[in-house]
Amino acid sequence: MAFIDRECVRRLIEAPDPDTALVFVRGECLVLPDAEIDEVHRRLIIARRRDLTAHLHGDTITDQQLDLLAERLDNVVHDLGA
Image 1: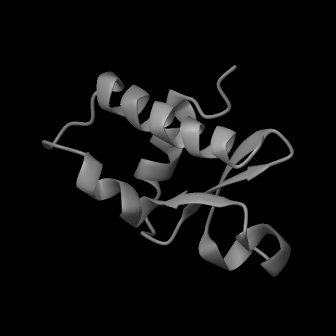
Image 2: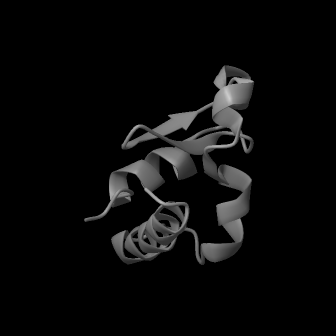
């Protein structure tokens, strides 16, 4: 079962702030600005928008790129024991 999907990754990449983060809380993928992440949830950060830019190629983000990133991030969630 996938925890992170294409739309979650798309929301993260389209966020204007590079410090926006994908946070996995109670089975839900949340995309939050850094200022909204409290200390308790800070350890649940899976990735920040700025971390993903190295994995994107070209001016247009394709569904295939989003799916690949979603799969990688989903593996991180699984490795964390979700």
